[in-house]
Image 1 (cartoon, protein in one colour):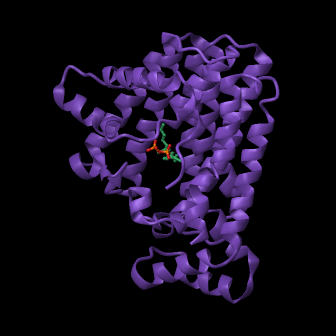
Image 2 (image 1 turned 90 degrees about the vertical axis):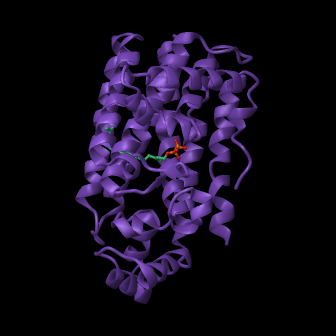
Length: 333
Ligand code: GRG
């Protein structure tokens, strides 16, 4: 769909991400081969590994030219991806999702009970690895898991609510997505022993990038195809999760807002779902949501003043510039 992330052009990152893969797989080896199989399912299915890539790159701002990550940085990166994976297992149970990362979801394959337990197992492994990196990292990861739950609860409180406000939406994505990206870059900074002001900049970068990332993800759900997403598109409207472009169409008033308001507030499928998506797609609010995502991405780039002259810092800035590319082509159709 778009050019690969600029992070992947960093000379050492591909090798470091290979080490992340190895440790990820190792970390979910249980005594029971069945548990290992269920816990490995989405690891084997792929995924972009954005959070480990950010943790490793944040740590690498330590040197002017990027060096390979230490074993502790790889562990930090793995702990963050394991939390992400655990949240995907649980999220798919909540949504009754059938597909994830282009393969059958864990709940669809083995049922909700096993998906919940395997998700818990991933979180437990994440906590164990974080604890090996010291109390600060362990506390941070635990607090971040709480933030994910808070963000998700805020979302659940507004499902099928056409009166969901932009403020409520932003508070939810702050918890469910931005918090973990902020923790990815923060753990990278902490484990690489970067100075505190730099750790705080890296954290703010991850947070602003995370806000932009979720807004882009939400726009893609409206504008992209099933093939591009690797899962059914339009899912948020079906599930009653009204995201930024939808909220803005409704707030805008006029006949389109009235018609969309009539369609929403209940589960959608077939012609009413297509009609709702078309109203949002053709409304101009996709562009306005893209502008908001761009503002967060710019904010992310601007936070990295002290490290922008390192190879890794420049790549993080380039990654935030690149983020909007993933959605531009689909939004322009
Ligand atoms: C138990 C940790 C835990 C949380 C419970 C279910 C829940 C509360 C939170 C769900 C949070 C959630 C699913 C947020 C969406 C985050 C998001 C943007 C996912 C997609 O991320 P990508 O695009 O996916 O990085 P890949 O597959 O590439 O890793």
